[in-house]
Amino acid sequence: MGKQIKSALDELIGSFRFYRESKKGKYSLDTYLDIIGEYTDRIVLECEKENYTFRGGTCTAKNNNAECTYDFTVKIYFQDNDGKEIVKEATRSLPKERFTSETENELTDEKIFEINKSVEER
Image 1 (cartoon, one colour):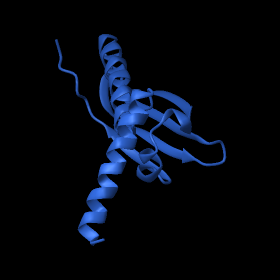
Image 2 (spheres, one colour):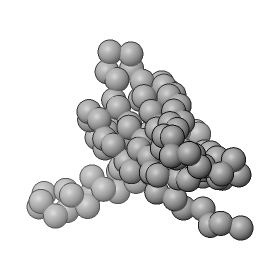
Image 3 (cartoon, helix red, strand yellow):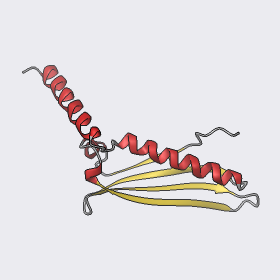
Image 4 (cartoon, one colour):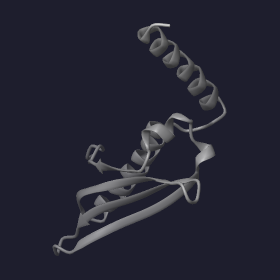
């Protein structure tokens, strides 16, 4: 079998596996990062109502092989009117079985994602 045909076949099989797993309620890494994004948007809005200035943030996603989980740590940085730094932090670990099998390939160790302000002021 040619290399291109094998690659296309692997991609097709991967697509069916993803479809089947997502129908069972499993998250892809991107889907779960979208959920985290919704959470961080709410935190930013709440803190801005308290007159804190959003300064940035990170989401660290880690493949925890010892515990068979994916661990997510969110840190969001703000500054109050007096210039004091405020950090909002949350950590969540989810069992690997809650994720699609492709997540293992996407998150082999640890990745850090930048959190940007994606909400508009009203």
